[in-house]
Every structure is written in C-alpha cells, then in structure tokens.
Amino acid sequence: MFVSPRNCPEPRIRRCLLAALLAGWVLVAAPQAARAQGVGPSVGGFVTGATAGTVVSAGIMALAAQSEVYLWNPHDLMGSMGIPIAVGALGGGIQGAVASDRLRPAVLLSATAGLAGVGLGYFLGREVWDDGQNGWAGALIGGGAGALAGWLIGTAISGSTSEAIPSTSVTLVAIPLGGGR
Image 1 (cartoon, rainbow, N blue to C red):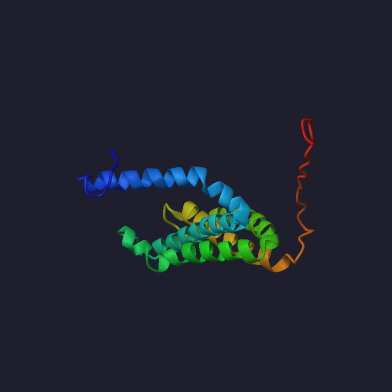
Image 2 (cartoon, one colour; image 1 turned 90 degrees about the vertical axis):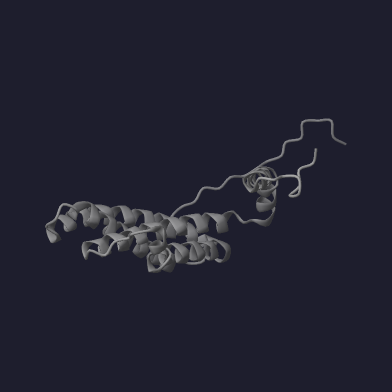
C-alpha cells in the first residue's frame, strides 16, 4: 500500500518516512552528484570552518564566563555566541569553492595554532585567574584565538599554489584486461 499524507495519520511517522527517503537519497544519489560537480572542497571547507567557528565560540563563551556571563538556554547560542560558527561555516565553504588551494594550508595552520593556543592558554589561564576554572577556561580561550589566527594567517600566506605544504597526488590508470574491441 502506498503511504501518503492522507492515509498516514501520525505526523511523526511522516517525518520518519521523509527522513528515511532523504537518508536513502544522500547515501545513493548524492555522492555521485557531488563528485560530478566537484563539491568536495566546498563541503570540506564548510565542515572545517564550522568546526573552527565552534572552537572560537567556545573560547568566547569561556571568556564571558570569567566575567560571570553565562549561557542559560540554547537560544543564547543563537545570538552573538553563534556568529563565529555561522561565519566559519560560510567562509570555509566559500573558500573551498573559490580558493580550494588555500584551504589545506589554512586548515593545517588553524589546527596547529589552535592546539598551541590550548597549551599556552592553559598555562596563562592558571596565572591570570585565581578560581578553579582557570586552566580549562584559558585553554578554551587560547584554542579559539589560535584557531582563528591560524585560519586567517594560513589563508593569507598561501598563494595561488601552496608549495609550503606538500600535497599528495594520486594517479589513476586504466588497464584494459581484454574483451574489448
């Protein structure tokens, strides 16, 4: 029997069916279409930009918490605290689509500077603040600052070709095995 909105009384079932159809399409049709259109760098930039934006937002939240400004519900994240996530995702997606050669150096430098910022922030946070949250708050703030600075510097210093960070290349070779004309 065909399931339609008229003979499917439960809205939750309709949502589940729609989610199942969408998941099936994503698993079957989307990968071929994405490869054909070359959207890999855009998606990679979107995901890494959103990740870097999340780290920056966590740093901002930790800095605000040191001033006793807290998030009380998820709607607080939709305001100014969520801006770095949205900007990171949008900027990373655009960078992946327009300047994909700058994406890899930016991601690598952002990750490296973010990790260095976590370590440095942890030790500085213990020196600056006297409360019990000093180490982890400093680590979050340093990680966010390092990730943002690394992304900006990595984007700025990489030119149209990125010789600073060697890339690997894969060559596909088709070998005829017979049976052809």
